[in-house]
Length: 165
Image 1 (tube, rainbow, N blue to C red):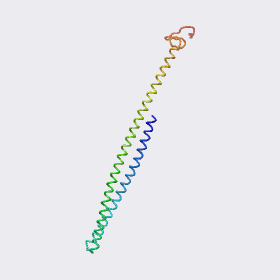
Image 2: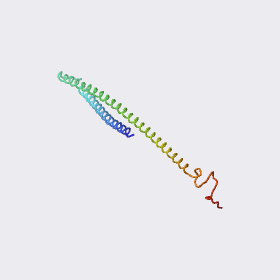
Image 3: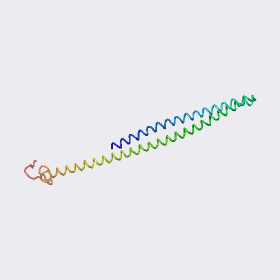
């Protein structure tokens, strides 16, 4: 039983580690999503601000700078989308690992319960057997067929019985 308890403790430790890793992966995924939203918002604002400016005409050098910056900004958004996908994959893997560890803890816990129940039943049977053996010895050792005071079949016999009214 001690081995099973050690196994359960180890499984719980593994589960707790997986839970911490899952929490960390979830926070990283949320941070990555937040950064992507921030970049996309900045890109929208930049396009809106400069789009109206260039609709009225503008210098070619300024237009080139705008397009270059928008290209770099789009590249940053694309990279962040990849980072989000990577973070989602890590989070999903961490959740899968956590589920596996929780299943392991539950399985070992059920095994511990079953072994505990088996041991209890075994002890109860052993105690009952000992009680039965002790009762049989008492019956064998008691005079006149096992009834105390010489009583047989509910009738009085011998000098020990005194009738009173």
